[in-house]
Length: 143
Image (cartoon, rainbow, N blue to C red):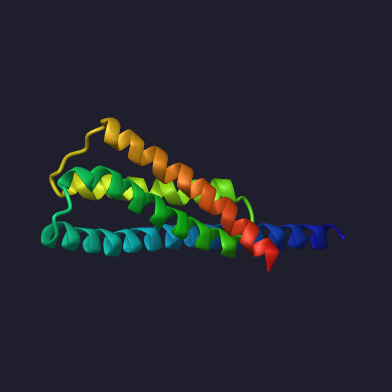
């Protein structure tokens, strides 16, 4: 009987570890989706900025809105498939997204600077990620 309990415990731990790894992969996929969506939307915005009379003063608000929309969608989709802990998982999607942006901008030579815009970007990324996570979990429970 003792051997059976040990084997059962190992099986349960294995399932838990597999599920955690799967959740991490889903969070990373949600972050990747948000990044790709941002690239597409920012490219569209750049074209509009170049060929229309849209003011460059719109850049910060537009980038924040694009960030919010992208993270919201990425975290919603990842949380639909995870089915639980939407706030945590969505927040992680937003945090990974923002960290990725800062690492890439540092490598690109823009510099790693924490200013008001950076703080605002972090807040928007994490909060919209959390909201998207809540939406994703609730969409899953509705269907």
